[in-house]
Structures are given as C-alpha cells and as structure tokens.
Image 1 (tube, one colour):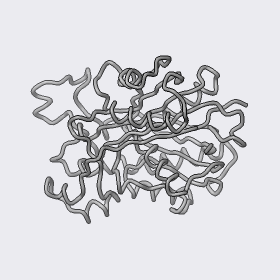
Image 2 (spheres, one colour; image 1 turned 45 degrees about the vertical axis):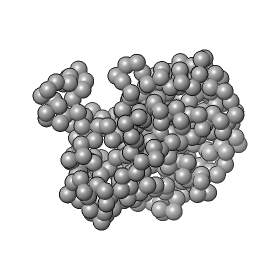
Image 3 (cartoon, helix red, strand yellow; image 1 turned 90 degrees about the horizontal axis):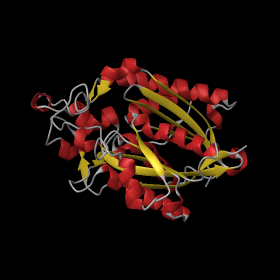
Image 4 (tube, rainbow, N blue to C red; image 1 turned 180 degrees about the vertical axis):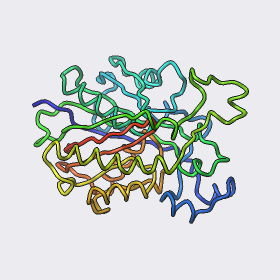
Length: 331
C-alpha cells in the first residue's frame, strides 16, 4: 500500500543567542528560576534582517540538497507558522519563489505549536493519494517578534528557528519506512488561554491595541500545562492502540518542545523512560512550528533515531490544537 515517507530534513536557527542570564537583565528572573520551571537555558533570536521566510528557505535548501533533488521537482509547499512575513501573500509564496520551485503550489497553515504536525498529516495524505511525488513541509517561526520582553511569564519561553521535512512515496511503511497514522483534534474552548489578542479582524491594529500590548502572546500557563500533558498522552495512547502497538514498541517520542515539565509528565503517563524521549528545548526554547524538526534533527545527530525505528510525534498548541503522528523512520 502506497504511503509517504520522510526522505530528508533540514533545519536553521539564527546565530544570535539570548541566554537566561541576559534575560535576567531585562525582567525580574534568573537562570535557576527559568531552568527549574521550563528546562530552557538559551534560545536563538533572529536579528532585524531575518524573517520567517528566510529561516524556512534556509531549512528547505538543506533538505533538498540532502535528497539531491531540484526545487522545481517539489509539488507542494506547506508553510506552518504563526509568524508569517505578512498577512498576505502567504509566506509559502515567498518561499516558493526564492527556492525556484516553479512547479509547486502551496499555502500557509496556522495551528500554532501543532502546526508542523498538522502539516505532516496533510503532506503525507497528498503523497499517499498519488497527487504529488514531493511535498515540502516547513515549520518556521520568528516568535521574538510577538513576544513581550517585559512579561517574564512568556519572554523566557520562546525562540526563533525553522525546519523542513521532504515527503515522498513509500510502497511499504513496514519495510521502507513511512507514515502509519495520526490523531488530530481541536478544542476552541481553550482559545482564551493562549492567544495573541490583536492584529486580526476582531481587533485590528490601532493606537489602543498597541498601547495595551495586545499584539503579543498572552498565556495562562497552568491551564495550558494541564491540557497539554493530558491531551498529548491521551492522543498518543489512542493512536498507538489504533495501530496495534504499545509505548514499549516506540523507539523515540519526539514531542513539541514547550516545557520540560510538560514533556516529562507526558512521558510518565505513557510509561516511557526519558532515554526514549527527545528533549532539546534547553538549547532553543519553544520555537513553535519549528520544534519538531529541530528535535528530530538533533535526535539523528545524537544517534537516537535510525532507519526502521518507530517514532511518535506529539504536540499541543494554541486553539487548542493537538495531535499525534506515528511513523517508521526511513533513513
């Protein structure tokens, strides 16, 4: 049965680094407080010359070069982000033009921290259907542009980065590697707990919205924490059961990298030891749609993810959005 496999990946993070020590000079906090509550030591921050499209383009070029194909062979570009270059045109259009992907169509996908996982679901099904041979799924966010650096509850959490997965056909997920299945869901009751209030049609930009700092991320941390732990574990368990496997069969869990305590609590609920859970947010913070490709790349570099391994991705984001995705690693 035809399915999709991940055949290459690429990542990019801007060179600038903001450490906990540097943050402690901006807001009332310190390295110990941040690490104990989040697990984050530092995060990469883009300078004024770098936008979301730049990071997506850089990551895409790495993935295409690793696979050895031209951008013109790509059929679809799915750009997952909450920080597009502009409201329109789609940032996917900017990426397509810069790459020279002359045969591609594409779009932006907005699902916050679940965005990349949702993009994988869409991309995998476009490939499996036979509609396209190559699909680029990009996750990139310049979170530093929508973070209030006077609010210590949010400014310690986020960083900037980008990642890319190239998807292509696999005839057999069991032997070649590939997409096995997903469970995704949304719950709009969570909308008030993690959002950016202004900038859309409900509250367009005005002197008042700017003065009230409504163009920045707002979060009620305890609400998000409780939902994220329960939902990532519940969806992961349900997905594994649906496909007749257990957590013991999973070589590596790669969750969205928002908070170390969320990740460890999720792993505990699944009965997975931390040596089979990828955690790298200490170096990057929460890069929203980029966390899963950044974590996957580090897992490969550390020798923790190899061809034939069963890998489980899981995420929860603003909305609420949530999902889990199961793959057999293909390279």
